Length: 418
Ligand code: HGY
Ligand code: MN
Ligand code: MN
Image 1 (cartoon, rainbow, N blue to C red):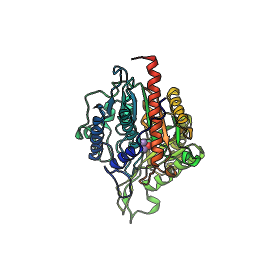
Image 2 (tube, helix red, strand yellow):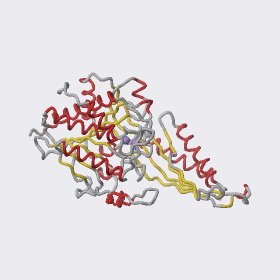
Image 3 (cartoon, helix red, strand yellow):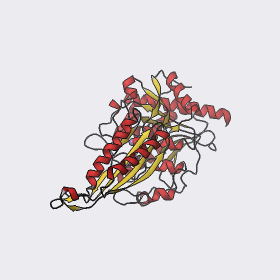
Image 4 (cartoon, rainbow, N blue to C red):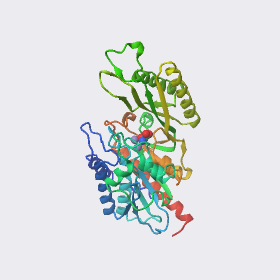
């Protein structure tokens, strides 16, 4: 382990501040929804920088960008560093972004140090990790891992009815390679924790051992549009009032399965959404998560039973569709060991942790040895424009990433000497 090798912390921070201008918001966050012109702009920025760093850059038919730094034996599958550049509508400067930019910094630091790895090293920008515009989340890493078909992904529509496939074509990122066609020797992802644990415990690094289970649902509640002034209360089939009672139950079920269960209704649309019309239809999303898949399944049954009871005899009906099911994931022990060893050699405070948030690594773990490295973010706040992380923590995370990649390259080289 060449543990006196360090990334250039200032250069890494500069790339974060530079790219944060692409979709930057007044409150200091980023709104850079996937497959928008802003996403295209940051993609071209990344391609330019990786090309300048001597990488061969390509992208596949899901728009995943691969920047490959050659090694001694380029017949070997690359060791990958991946994350995402798309954001939430009120996203921060760090979620996903530090994973891609730390990967670029690792490539640059290897160049500066004149290090030739045995296997190629490949930086990946995964398309549509957030699922904020095109549900579900982690769509393209999911296609890469064989969880979703490309056709399913291309048919996903945003709330304006635009198709993923059309938007990918519009920004010019439909690559020739079939998504999932090339193998990865390993996959590492640096990410902010997006929770309060590391900061609360004063730890610099989270050694991520896995990702909790999560499911997304779409619920449509159907009552009857009617005049707000002339319809007596006893005759109403008000879908929004019904939905409000149903949403209370979504929260109660997570509390009942606490402390680890979480539930969120993040998206709600009332129709016709007019001040003097009783809402006849409401659509809302549900996000259920728990480290144990059986508990998520129990929460799903309980919420459906509760909805039936709430609507019984009201004349109001509902449909309930599970649109995404990402079971709990356990990462690769060799990759975890490489991260743990790097934190020790670098003298960094660290603890093992399970990710509450979903990440592309959760799907890539199905097709390649994978793990993640977390760094703290201020008060655990994320998916919020105020998201904040310390330059020193991000640089430490990038140093761990660099060491873990080098250690993995050395370990695999013993198996496949060049
Ligand atoms: O939803 C998630 O957990 C991730 O941040 N996309
Ligand atoms: Mn993320
Ligand atoms: Mn996110």
